[in-house]
Length: 174
Image (cartoon, rainbow, N blue to C red; front, side, top):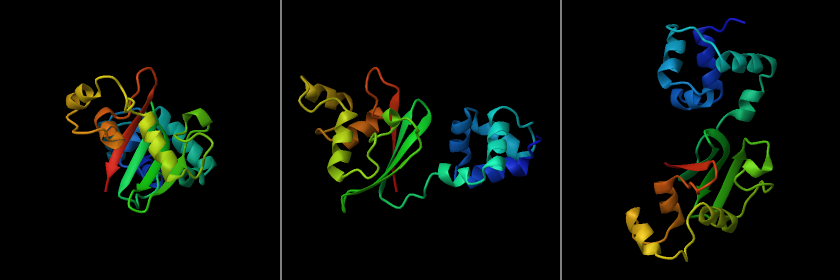
């Protein structure tokens, strides 16, 4: 199957992804995606396979698309560089909306829970930080240039990385 530049661009747009996010999905550089879309480089590897999948199952693009951010805060929960869960948060209304991409429950931010409460979301944030009762916590907070213990601020500085696991969180504010 030959993939043309306009095909790759249509696939990326149908997934609702920027060139950067599409490049991350395919584990290639942004420059590679740009060259593919401009017809300056042959399209090979996972991009060809992805286009084939989209031809066979056109609805998959909708299932995989990242929803438009409608809340002031979005957390993108990854395992390595694979998006597992999108978490949209409205702190003022204490509302949480998620979209899971991971098939394995252990890779989802909230496991089996499809509609997490605000309290469960707060617990999730704390789970992705060092504990609030940690010995010498003031020193840790000073290292991060954070004035007080706030899980979201810690996650913004540390990407929610916990020693020994492959998960990280990208924080997006609108």
